Amino acid sequence: MNARLDHRNPLVFDTHELGRRPGALQRLTRSVPAPKDLGIGGVIGAPEGAPVELDLRLESVMEGVLVTGTSRAVAEGECVRCLEPLRQEVTADFQELFSYHDADDRGRFHAEPDDDADDDEDRLYIEDGLFDLEPVLRDAVVLALPMQPVCRENCAGLCAECGIRLDGDPDHHHDAVDIRWAALQGLAETVKDGEKDNMGGADAGVDEKQEK
Image (cartoon, rainbow, N blue to C red; front, top):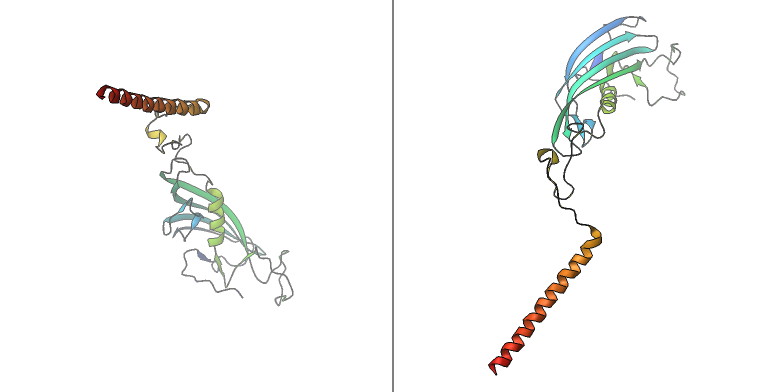
């Protein structure tokens, strides 16, 4: 059994004024607070409570109410290249049919509900003249957001060796050491250190002889 919708929820809309006469239209403009986790978790999204501007067109059809709309919000996240915080305007378009419980896919109405019919889990319904736009809004915003947000298209990111932000220091670089010579260089330094130790021992022997 479906839970009753709360008309006080800003994302719940009332269709009683629209009516059920096919072809009836209603246009709505509403600013609503963003629900929790509106976006791609941990990557980018509209902060909870931030304003989301909605422009909606409600059309009564045989099966229910066809809702066509656009949402606009400012999403916040982190650049995947340089890890700097970013803000990005996101516009998402959507269209969804909210069905009446007493109508099937062909628009025919049942006198009584068919208990044996399989419910379509993906179908959204009108409950007591109300529909909840939140699941539709969530899907639309997620599709409109970038999976890999960047602060700007040519962001240079971070230095792989020291982590400095390259856009802040375009001339930043590290002297590259050819790995083919790195082992020989280490060996040469070891030989030098050994020679110094041997020379130190020889000098000590000479000093002892002179003292005798």
